Length: 95
Image (cartoon, rainbow, N blue to C red; front, top):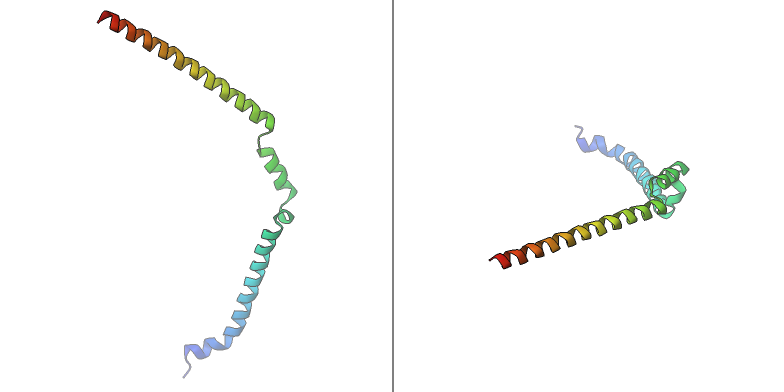
């Protein structure tokens, strides 16, 4: 009578060796990527990455635009505050 173990166990060492080889290859690739990631990076990826990053001129221009918008907003708030003050003084004088 043949059991499941008697049919599977003779093939187990070969399967175990195959899995260990696959794990060793995967571990080697992961270790290589961790130790020297630049070695596996292509020149095309570098060029695309550099092109995607904004230049310092673009960043400076964005900062200037943002600063102008903040100044304009602060001026609008100052005008609104002075109008509110004038309205409050008028209502006190009337009341």
